[in-house]
Length: 427
Image (cartoon, rainbow, N blue to C red; front, side, top):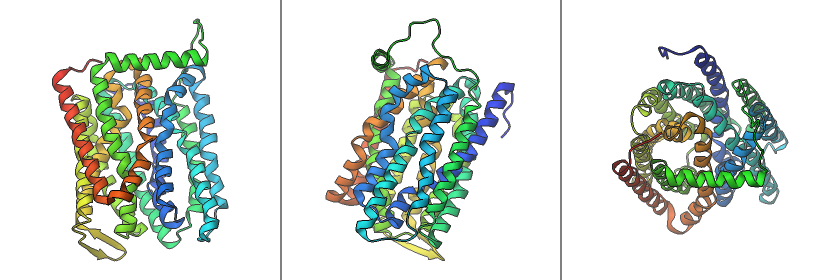
Protein backbone atom coordinates (compact mmCIF):
# COMPACT_ATOMS: atom_id res chain seq x y z
CA UNK A 1 0.00 0.00 0.00
CA UNK A 2 3.01 2.24 -0.56
CA UNK A 3 2.67 5.18 -2.92
CA UNK A 4 5.82 7.09 -3.82
CA UNK A 5 5.92 10.90 -3.78
CA UNK A 6 3.16 11.69 -1.29
CA UNK A 7 3.25 15.17 0.21
CA UNK A 8 3.07 15.61 4.00
CA UNK A 9 -0.49 16.96 3.83
CA UNK A 10 -1.57 14.07 1.62
CA UNK A 11 -0.25 11.60 4.20
CA UNK A 12 -2.16 13.33 7.03
CA UNK A 13 -5.44 13.44 5.11
CA UNK A 14 -4.95 9.86 3.94
CA UNK A 15 -4.48 8.75 7.57
CA UNK A 16 -7.77 10.38 8.61
CA UNK A 17 -9.44 8.99 5.49
CA UNK A 18 -8.32 5.45 6.41
CA UNK A 19 -9.56 5.75 10.02
CA UNK A 20 -12.89 7.11 8.80
CA UNK A 21 -13.14 4.28 6.25
CA UNK A 22 -12.50 1.63 8.93
CA UNK A 23 -15.31 2.86 11.18
CA UNK A 24 -17.69 3.37 8.26
CA UNK A 25 -16.82 -0.18 7.14
CA UNK A 26 -18.41 -1.46 10.35
CA UNK A 27 -21.53 0.60 9.63
CA UNK A 28 -21.70 -0.52 6.00
CA UNK A 29 -21.18 -4.16 7.03
CA UNK A 30 -24.29 -4.00 9.18
CA UNK A 31 -26.27 -2.00 6.63
CA UNK A 32 -25.58 -4.61 3.91
CA UNK A 33 -28.09 -6.86 5.69
CA UNK A 34 -30.51 -4.03 6.49
CA UNK A 35 -33.15 -4.99 3.92
CA UNK A 36 -32.90 -8.65 4.92
CA UNK A 37 -33.44 -7.76 8.59
CA UNK A 38 -36.54 -5.84 7.56
CA UNK A 39 -37.96 -8.71 5.46
CA UNK A 40 -36.83 -11.79 7.41
CA UNK A 41 -36.86 -10.64 11.05
CA UNK A 42 -39.52 -7.91 11.04
CA UNK A 43 -41.61 -9.40 8.18
CA UNK A 44 -41.94 -6.07 6.38
CA UNK A 45 -44.02 -5.93 3.19
CA UNK A 46 -42.71 -5.73 -0.38
CA UNK A 47 -43.74 -2.11 -0.83
CA UNK A 48 -42.27 -1.15 2.54
CA UNK A 49 -39.01 -2.78 1.43
CA UNK A 50 -39.05 -0.57 -1.67
CA UNK A 51 -39.66 2.49 0.53
CA UNK A 52 -36.70 1.51 2.73
CA UNK A 53 -34.38 1.42 -0.27
CA UNK A 54 -36.01 4.54 -1.73
CA UNK A 55 -35.28 6.41 1.51
CA UNK A 56 -31.57 5.63 1.09
CA UNK A 57 -31.39 7.44 -2.25
CA UNK A 58 -34.28 9.90 -2.50
CA UNK A 59 -32.49 12.10 0.06
CA UNK A 60 -30.07 13.06 -2.72
CA UNK A 61 -32.81 15.24 -4.23
CA UNK A 62 -31.83 17.81 -1.60
CA UNK A 63 -28.14 17.81 -2.53
CA UNK A 64 -28.27 21.14 -4.39
CA UNK A 65 -29.96 22.79 -1.38
CA UNK A 66 -27.41 21.26 0.95
CA UNK A 67 -24.58 22.37 -1.32
CA UNK A 68 -25.73 25.98 -0.85
CA UNK A 69 -25.82 25.53 2.94
CA UNK A 70 -22.26 24.16 2.83
CA UNK A 71 -21.15 27.48 1.29
CA UNK A 72 -22.66 29.43 4.17
CA UNK A 73 -21.72 27.42 7.24
CA UNK A 74 -18.53 25.78 8.44
CA UNK A 75 -18.18 22.24 7.13
CA UNK A 76 -16.72 21.09 10.44
CA UNK A 77 -19.83 22.26 12.30
CA UNK A 78 -22.15 20.78 9.69
CA UNK A 79 -20.45 17.37 9.88
CA UNK A 80 -20.75 17.27 13.66
CA UNK A 81 -24.40 18.36 13.68
CA UNK A 82 -25.12 15.81 10.97
CA UNK A 83 -23.53 13.09 13.11
CA UNK A 84 -25.85 13.83 16.02
CA UNK A 85 -29.06 14.34 14.02
CA UNK A 86 -28.72 11.32 11.71
CA UNK A 87 -26.93 8.70 13.88
CA UNK A 88 -28.51 9.24 17.33
CA UNK A 89 -31.95 7.90 16.20
CA UNK A 90 -30.33 4.44 15.75
CA UNK A 91 -30.16 4.23 19.54
CA UNK A 92 -33.98 4.04 19.56
CA UNK A 93 -33.72 0.50 18.15
CA UNK A 94 -33.16 -0.66 21.73
CA UNK A 95 -36.92 -0.21 22.24
CA UNK A 96 -37.86 -2.69 19.49
CA UNK A 97 -39.39 -6.07 20.53
CA UNK A 98 -37.12 -9.10 20.99
CA UNK A 99 -39.51 -11.42 19.14
CA UNK A 100 -42.05 -11.29 16.31
CA UNK A 101 -45.39 -9.84 17.45
CA UNK A 102 -48.77 -10.07 15.75
CA UNK A 103 -49.07 -8.56 12.27
CA UNK A 104 -51.06 -5.58 13.59
CA UNK A 105 -48.56 -4.85 16.36
CA UNK A 106 -45.61 -5.07 13.98
CA UNK A 107 -46.97 -2.36 11.67
CA UNK A 108 -45.89 0.35 14.12
CA UNK A 109 -42.33 -1.05 14.25
CA UNK A 110 -42.19 -1.31 10.45
CA UNK A 111 -42.75 2.42 10.08
CA UNK A 112 -40.61 3.23 13.13
CA UNK A 113 -37.78 1.35 11.39
CA UNK A 114 -38.33 3.30 8.15
CA UNK A 115 -38.32 6.69 9.93
CA UNK A 116 -35.12 5.90 11.85
CA UNK A 117 -33.32 4.99 8.65
CA UNK A 118 -34.69 7.99 6.78
CA UNK A 119 -32.84 10.10 9.35
CA UNK A 120 -29.73 7.94 8.97
CA UNK A 121 -29.71 8.28 5.17
CA UNK A 122 -30.07 12.08 5.38
CA UNK A 123 -26.34 12.18 6.18
CA UNK A 124 -25.31 10.96 2.73
CA UNK A 125 -26.08 14.05 0.58
CA UNK A 126 -24.26 16.13 3.19
CA UNK A 127 -21.22 13.95 3.79
CA UNK A 128 -20.40 12.74 0.26
CA UNK A 129 -19.89 16.18 -1.37
CA UNK A 130 -17.75 17.23 1.63
CA UNK A 131 -15.58 14.12 1.30
CA UNK A 132 -15.24 14.72 -2.44
CA UNK A 133 -14.18 18.32 -1.83
CA UNK A 134 -11.72 17.39 0.96
CA UNK A 135 -10.01 14.70 -1.10
CA UNK A 136 -9.98 16.58 -4.41
CA UNK A 137 -8.36 19.59 -2.75
CA UNK A 138 -5.79 17.58 -0.76
CA UNK A 139 -4.83 14.70 -3.08
CA UNK A 140 -2.87 15.42 -6.25
CA UNK A 141 -4.46 14.23 -9.50
CA UNK A 142 -1.81 11.54 -9.97
CA UNK A 143 -2.63 10.01 -6.56
CA UNK A 144 -6.37 10.73 -6.33
CA UNK A 145 -7.75 7.44 -7.64
CA UNK A 146 -5.06 5.28 -6.03
CA UNK A 147 -5.42 6.78 -2.54
CA UNK A 148 -9.19 6.62 -2.74
CA UNK A 149 -9.05 2.97 -3.82
CA UNK A 150 -6.83 2.01 -0.86
CA UNK A 151 -9.24 3.67 1.57
CA UNK A 152 -12.17 1.96 -0.17
CA UNK A 153 -10.32 -1.38 -0.01
CA UNK A 154 -9.79 -0.98 3.74
CA UNK A 155 -13.44 -0.06 4.12
CA UNK A 156 -14.54 -3.21 2.30
CA UNK A 157 -12.27 -5.52 4.32
CA UNK A 158 -13.84 -4.26 7.55
CA UNK A 159 -17.28 -4.35 5.93
CA UNK A 160 -16.79 -7.99 4.88
CA UNK A 161 -15.79 -9.11 8.37
CA UNK A 162 -18.69 -7.19 9.93
CA UNK A 163 -21.24 -8.65 7.49
CA UNK A 164 -20.09 -12.21 8.25
CA UNK A 165 -20.28 -11.69 12.03
CA UNK A 166 -23.65 -9.89 11.87
CA UNK A 167 -25.16 -12.58 9.61
CA UNK A 168 -23.96 -15.31 11.96
CA UNK A 169 -25.42 -13.45 14.97
CA UNK A 170 -28.76 -12.95 13.20
CA UNK A 171 -29.09 -16.68 12.46
CA UNK A 172 -28.65 -17.33 16.19
CA UNK A 173 -31.05 -14.53 17.19
CA UNK A 174 -33.04 -12.78 14.41
CA UNK A 175 -33.72 -9.86 16.77
CA UNK A 176 -30.11 -9.25 17.83
CA UNK A 177 -30.22 -6.11 15.66
CA UNK A 178 -31.88 -4.29 18.59
CA UNK A 179 -28.44 -4.21 20.23
CA UNK A 180 -26.27 -3.95 17.11
CA UNK A 181 -27.93 -0.88 15.56
CA UNK A 182 -27.54 1.34 18.68
CA UNK A 183 -23.85 0.35 18.85
CA UNK A 184 -23.20 1.38 15.24
CA UNK A 185 -25.12 4.60 15.87
CA UNK A 186 -22.46 5.58 18.41
CA UNK A 187 -19.69 4.51 16.02
CA UNK A 188 -21.30 6.58 13.26
CA UNK A 189 -21.13 9.70 15.40
CA UNK A 190 -17.45 9.05 16.08
CA UNK A 191 -16.67 8.55 12.37
CA UNK A 192 -18.16 11.90 11.30
CA UNK A 193 -16.46 13.76 14.15
CA UNK A 194 -13.21 12.15 12.98
CA UNK A 195 -13.86 13.25 9.37
CA UNK A 196 -14.43 16.81 10.57
CA UNK A 197 -10.76 17.01 11.61
CA UNK A 198 -9.83 16.70 7.91
CA UNK A 199 -11.54 20.05 7.28
CA UNK A 200 -8.69 22.50 7.85
CA UNK A 201 -10.12 25.74 6.53
CA UNK A 202 -13.73 26.55 5.75
CA UNK A 203 -13.87 28.90 2.80
CA UNK A 204 -16.99 30.91 3.48
CA UNK A 205 -18.07 33.79 1.29
CA UNK A 206 -16.27 36.92 2.43
CA UNK A 207 -16.24 40.39 0.92
CA UNK A 208 -19.08 39.49 -1.41
CA UNK A 209 -22.76 40.18 -1.32
CA UNK A 210 -24.42 37.16 0.30
CA UNK A 211 -27.47 36.09 -1.65
CA UNK A 212 -30.66 34.97 0.05
CA UNK A 213 -31.33 31.23 0.14
CA UNK A 214 -33.96 31.59 -2.60
CA UNK A 215 -31.67 33.64 -4.87
CA UNK A 216 -28.78 31.29 -4.14
CA UNK A 217 -30.86 28.24 -5.03
CA UNK A 218 -31.95 29.84 -8.28
CA UNK A 219 -28.29 30.50 -9.05
CA UNK A 220 -27.44 26.87 -8.19
CA UNK A 221 -30.05 25.54 -10.58
CA UNK A 222 -28.84 27.93 -13.28
CA UNK A 223 -25.27 26.74 -12.67
CA UNK A 224 -26.48 23.15 -12.81
CA UNK A 225 -28.20 23.85 -16.11
CA UNK A 226 -25.06 25.54 -17.44
CA UNK A 227 -22.86 22.60 -16.43
CA UNK A 228 -25.15 20.07 -18.11
CA UNK A 229 -25.48 22.25 -21.21
CA UNK A 230 -21.84 23.30 -21.69
CA UNK A 231 -19.93 20.22 -20.51
CA UNK A 232 -21.09 17.65 -23.06
CA UNK A 233 -18.91 14.74 -21.83
CA UNK A 234 -20.28 15.23 -18.30
CA UNK A 235 -23.85 15.49 -19.62
CA UNK A 236 -23.45 12.19 -21.47
CA UNK A 237 -21.87 10.64 -18.39
CA UNK A 238 -24.93 11.62 -16.34
CA UNK A 239 -27.30 10.38 -19.07
CA UNK A 240 -25.62 6.98 -19.03
CA UNK A 241 -25.67 7.05 -15.25
CA UNK A 242 -29.38 7.83 -15.29
CA UNK A 243 -30.09 4.71 -17.38
CA UNK A 244 -27.82 2.62 -15.16
CA UNK A 245 -29.44 4.11 -12.05
CA UNK A 246 -32.94 3.17 -13.15
CA UNK A 247 -31.75 -0.39 -13.78
CA UNK A 248 -30.06 -0.60 -10.39
CA UNK A 249 -32.98 0.87 -8.47
CA UNK A 250 -35.61 -1.18 -10.30
CA UNK A 251 -33.86 -4.42 -9.40
CA UNK A 252 -32.18 -3.90 -6.01
CA UNK A 253 -35.25 -4.56 -3.84
CA UNK A 254 -36.42 -7.32 -6.21
CA UNK A 255 -33.06 -9.11 -5.78
CA UNK A 256 -33.59 -9.06 -2.00
CA UNK A 257 -37.01 -10.67 -2.42
CA UNK A 258 -35.57 -13.18 -4.90
CA UNK A 259 -32.88 -14.34 -2.47
CA UNK A 260 -35.29 -14.54 0.48
CA UNK A 261 -38.57 -15.75 -1.07
CA UNK A 262 -37.52 -17.64 -4.21
CA UNK A 263 -34.20 -19.12 -3.06
CA UNK A 264 -35.05 -19.23 0.68
CA UNK A 265 -31.53 -18.32 1.82
CA UNK A 266 -30.67 -17.92 5.51
CA UNK A 267 -28.67 -15.00 6.92
CA UNK A 268 -25.41 -17.00 6.89
CA UNK A 269 -25.74 -17.81 3.18
CA UNK A 270 -26.71 -14.24 2.31
CA UNK A 271 -23.68 -12.96 4.25
CA UNK A 272 -21.48 -15.38 2.28
CA UNK A 273 -22.69 -14.06 -1.08
CA UNK A 274 -22.31 -10.47 0.07
CA UNK A 275 -18.80 -11.18 1.35
CA UNK A 276 -17.76 -13.06 -1.79
CA UNK A 277 -18.35 -10.05 -4.01
CA UNK A 278 -16.74 -7.73 -1.48
CA UNK A 279 -13.64 -9.95 -1.39
CA UNK A 280 -13.35 -9.67 -5.18
CA UNK A 281 -13.83 -5.90 -4.89
CA UNK A 282 -11.10 -5.67 -2.23
CA UNK A 283 -8.61 -7.54 -4.40
CA UNK A 284 -9.36 -5.46 -7.50
CA UNK A 285 -9.78 -1.95 -6.05
CA UNK A 286 -6.07 -1.01 -6.21
CA UNK A 287 -5.96 -1.99 -9.89
CA UNK A 288 -9.13 -0.10 -10.78
CA UNK A 289 -8.05 2.86 -8.62
CA UNK A 290 -5.00 3.30 -10.83
CA UNK A 291 -6.95 2.55 -14.01
CA UNK A 292 -9.57 5.26 -13.44
CA UNK A 293 -6.73 7.84 -13.30
CA UNK A 294 -5.49 6.73 -16.74
CA UNK A 295 -8.54 6.26 -18.94
CA UNK A 296 -11.58 8.31 -19.88
CA UNK A 297 -14.18 7.92 -17.08
CA UNK A 298 -16.86 7.18 -19.71
CA UNK A 299 -14.95 4.10 -20.84
CA UNK A 300 -14.57 3.12 -17.19
CA UNK A 301 -18.32 3.65 -16.77
CA UNK A 302 -19.16 1.42 -19.75
CA UNK A 303 -17.24 -1.46 -18.20
CA UNK A 304 -18.87 -0.83 -14.82
CA UNK A 305 -22.35 -0.96 -16.36
CA UNK A 306 -21.43 -4.21 -18.13
CA UNK A 307 -20.53 -5.88 -14.83
CA UNK A 308 -23.95 -5.09 -13.34
CA UNK A 309 -25.60 -6.31 -16.55
CA UNK A 310 -23.90 -9.70 -16.14
CA UNK A 311 -24.85 -9.80 -12.45
CA UNK A 312 -28.53 -9.37 -13.33
CA UNK A 313 -28.32 -11.79 -16.28
CA UNK A 314 -27.04 -14.70 -14.19
CA UNK A 315 -29.33 -13.85 -11.29
CA UNK A 316 -32.31 -14.04 -13.64
CA UNK A 317 -31.16 -17.37 -15.10
CA UNK A 318 -31.21 -18.90 -11.60
CA UNK A 319 -35.00 -18.88 -11.71
CA UNK A 320 -34.85 -21.40 -14.59
CA UNK A 321 -31.75 -23.33 -13.46
CA UNK A 322 -32.03 -23.38 -9.64
CA UNK A 323 -29.31 -25.95 -9.03
CA UNK A 324 -27.39 -25.87 -5.76
CA UNK A 325 -25.48 -27.83 -3.15
CA UNK A 326 -25.29 -27.42 0.63
CA UNK A 327 -22.27 -27.28 2.90
CA UNK A 328 -23.35 -26.99 6.51
CA UNK A 329 -25.49 -23.86 6.89
CA UNK A 330 -24.41 -22.54 3.47
CA UNK A 331 -26.42 -23.05 0.27
CA UNK A 332 -24.53 -22.50 -2.98
CA UNK A 333 -26.55 -21.84 -6.16
CA UNK A 334 -24.18 -22.29 -9.09
CA UNK A 335 -25.51 -19.36 -11.13
CA UNK A 336 -25.84 -17.10 -8.08
CA UNK A 337 -22.14 -17.68 -7.36
CA UNK A 338 -21.33 -16.57 -10.92
CA UNK A 339 -23.73 -13.63 -10.56
CA UNK A 340 -22.01 -12.41 -7.40
CA UNK A 341 -18.58 -12.83 -8.99
CA UNK A 342 -19.67 -10.23 -11.55
CA UNK A 343 -21.11 -8.21 -8.69
CA UNK A 344 -17.62 -8.14 -7.19
CA UNK A 345 -16.32 -6.45 -10.34
CA UNK A 346 -19.27 -4.07 -10.17
CA UNK A 347 -18.60 -3.22 -6.50
CA UNK A 348 -14.91 -2.51 -7.20
CA UNK A 349 -15.56 -0.23 -10.15
CA UNK A 350 -18.77 1.48 -8.99
CA UNK A 351 -17.32 2.39 -5.59
CA UNK A 352 -14.85 4.55 -7.52
CA UNK A 353 -17.10 5.74 -10.33
CA UNK A 354 -20.04 6.75 -8.12
CA UNK A 355 -17.97 8.58 -5.52
CA UNK A 356 -15.27 10.32 -7.56
CA UNK A 357 -16.25 9.83 -11.23
CA UNK A 358 -17.74 13.30 -11.57
CA UNK A 359 -14.49 14.90 -10.31
CA UNK A 360 -12.68 13.90 -13.52
CA UNK A 361 -14.91 16.24 -15.55
CA UNK A 362 -14.07 19.44 -13.69
CA UNK A 363 -11.41 21.60 -12.06
CA UNK A 364 -10.47 20.98 -8.42
CA UNK A 365 -12.55 23.87 -7.08
CA UNK A 366 -15.70 22.62 -8.82
CA UNK A 367 -15.58 19.04 -7.47
CA UNK A 368 -18.23 19.67 -4.79
CA UNK A 369 -20.59 21.31 -7.30
CA UNK A 370 -20.25 18.55 -9.87
CA UNK A 371 -20.78 15.86 -7.23
CA UNK A 372 -23.85 17.72 -6.00
CA UNK A 373 -25.31 17.68 -9.50
CA UNK A 374 -24.47 13.98 -9.74
CA UNK A 375 -26.14 13.14 -6.41
CA UNK A 376 -29.22 15.25 -7.22
CA UNK A 377 -29.74 13.09 -10.30
CA UNK A 378 -29.62 10.03 -8.02
CA UNK A 379 -32.42 11.49 -5.90
CA UNK A 380 -34.57 12.32 -8.93
CA UNK A 381 -34.58 8.74 -10.24
CA UNK A 382 -35.11 7.44 -6.69
CA UNK A 383 -38.50 9.19 -6.63
CA UNK A 384 -39.75 6.68 -9.20
CA UNK A 385 -37.61 3.59 -9.67
CA UNK A 386 -37.69 1.54 -6.40
CA UNK A 387 -41.49 1.46 -6.00
CA UNK A 388 -41.92 1.02 -9.75
CA UNK A 389 -39.58 -1.99 -9.59
CA UNK A 390 -41.72 -3.70 -6.95
CA UNK A 391 -44.88 -2.86 -8.89
CA UNK A 392 -43.37 -4.39 -12.04
CA UNK A 393 -42.31 -7.49 -10.12
CA UNK A 394 -45.88 -8.00 -8.93
CA UNK A 395 -47.10 -7.95 -12.55
CA UNK A 396 -44.25 -9.43 -14.63
CA UNK A 397 -42.29 -11.43 -12.05
CA UNK A 398 -38.60 -11.69 -11.29
CA UNK A 399 -37.50 -12.48 -14.86
CA UNK A 400 -39.36 -9.53 -16.35
CA UNK A 401 -37.71 -7.04 -13.97
CA UNK A 402 -34.24 -8.54 -14.51
CA UNK A 403 -34.71 -8.43 -18.31
CA UNK A 404 -35.72 -4.75 -18.16
CA UNK A 405 -32.66 -4.03 -16.02
CA UNK A 406 -30.39 -5.68 -18.61
CA UNK A 407 -31.98 -3.64 -21.41
CA UNK A 408 -31.44 -0.33 -19.59
CA UNK A 409 -27.80 -1.22 -18.90
CA UNK A 410 -27.25 -2.07 -22.56
CA UNK A 411 -28.53 1.40 -23.47
CA UNK A 412 -26.26 3.03 -20.87
CA UNK A 413 -23.20 1.32 -22.39
CA UNK A 414 -24.21 2.48 -25.88
CA UNK A 415 -24.49 6.08 -24.60
CA UNK A 416 -20.96 5.95 -23.16
CA UNK A 417 -19.34 4.73 -26.37
CA UNK A 418 -21.40 7.17 -28.46
CA UNK A 419 -20.15 10.01 -26.24
CA UNK A 420 -16.54 8.83 -26.48
CA UNK A 421 -16.63 9.00 -30.26
CA UNK A 422 -18.28 12.42 -30.32
CA UNK A 423 -16.58 14.53 -27.64
CA UNK A 424 -13.17 14.57 -25.96
CA UNK A 425 -12.90 14.95 -22.20
CA UNK A 426 -12.15 18.49 -21.04
CA UNK A 427 -11.64 19.18 -17.35
